[in-house]
Image (cartoon, rainbow, N blue to C red; front, side, top):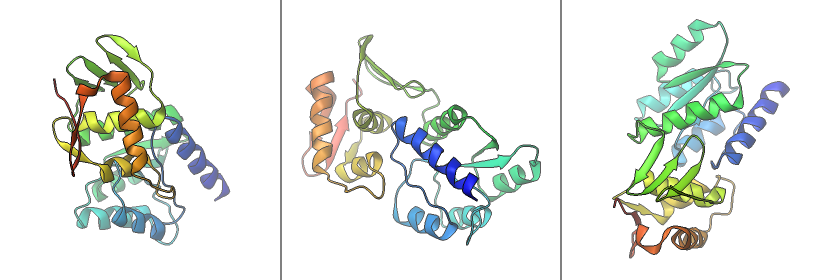
Length: 214
């Protein structure tokens, strides 16, 4: 169990370094509570969780029409676990032991597909964001962003053309146990406007922000 807990911490750290806000739970009951109370872009779900196992959670979530993409780590060679996971609603699996880079790449792919972006590159006019490398360019010129700025931009570009609320952005960039202050979203928006130009992000009064498609 200690090895599994250490691996979970390492994966959470790697995902946070890649710019994700991460919640981590060690048992199925706590994980189930989070999934029913929070909104996630993707879930990494171990099938051998205590209290409520991963397969039961998957069936429960899919039965409740929770469509969040789920990636399940499985022991190499245990094909029956992979089949059970897929039958229960998993979107992808990765064999243990795994490289963190592989897990992150699979998470990127799941999030792209769920957002209906088949390519790894998001594009709004002359603004591009490569979700694999976290590189941003405007008119072909690289733009350096912090991890939180990148999270905000990625969320806006995934939903370009529609209004993204402050609450959605806050959920996207902060882990569940952080003190979520929506005012900081405005700071990140202001920084992005300084780096990219104010015309890229429109403020929709009383609603949120909208990324320009132009």
